[in-house]
Image (cartoon, rainbow, N blue to C red; front, side, top):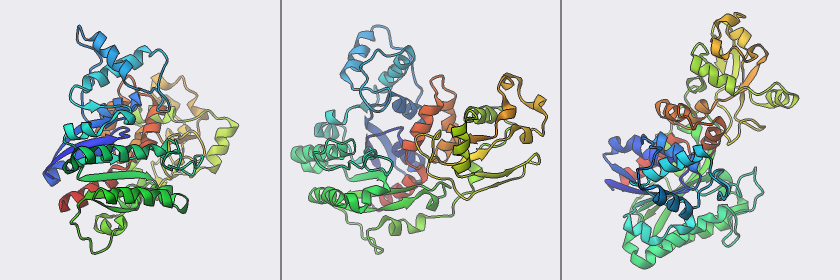
Length: 417
């Protein structure tokens, strides 16, 4: 498989495409993103920025009518929860225009219900990723599950069955050679076991052999306690793993020591950029926030004016909302100690903030993305963009997939097929 033609269902910000691009030179492969199914406009916009595309926020003269027709035909969302039926704000129209221009080279089919088997055949897809919504599986959710016909968000998985079935009927030889799924570890729990077994049986009936397991980001260098369910399905697999089918055994040689947490934190506050972001990630000193700080994991154990630091080994799971309990953890952030009481050293353009009253902060959006394995030069493209919003980026990081875990899965299997 020298040529990867990718279909990302429930694409988010494109962690799968990012991971494949990171390893393509090592494996001597070419990667093309052919179909993207994602309806959240902010996620698609971040996808564009993170993956090195230059967003264009203007429409060519004479194409305005075509643009608005395209917007009306697609089920875009401004919040990732439901289709937007309200008037688009001017900043959102700019984002939509950037997606419209990006769509010249990529087939963006926002609604998974509108993706057809014929699209897969037309785009010559040989690699499909389908990290379907986790809300109804997560321990933080309502536990509605993904039973077929249950009409839940996690039940969107069965749209992948429909798409594969349509390909199978049209031309069985055109089924994707490799499928990769990621979801919360609860997917493999006793509660949802029968539904997952049913899904594996369907894949087997199509000719797929599935290798699955729960992988922890800490085993792949990232100091974040993040255990997630992964499944890799190979069409007509001739791979023989002596260790068995469990992904933990298959990827045993890919595992390595957890990197130091301090490597991913931007606590050198002499850097004005990092100081501003840390101040932005500092909540108001209310009773509820102080209580949150007292009950949250303390990431930075010590910090004094000699720049002496010590950190816990790994943070908790990066969630979609840091400003709540249970979050990934919080840091001591005493400006007085950092600057040794010399507030004159604080840059003038942030002196209007009552920095002397700040004592703690959340992990910043930049740090959240770093702890998901994204490269800082790419993260910078989002943070420096005028459409950047810290809450959106926190949300996107929490919904993403740890890049080094994906890289190792892809490397191990692509080498063999």
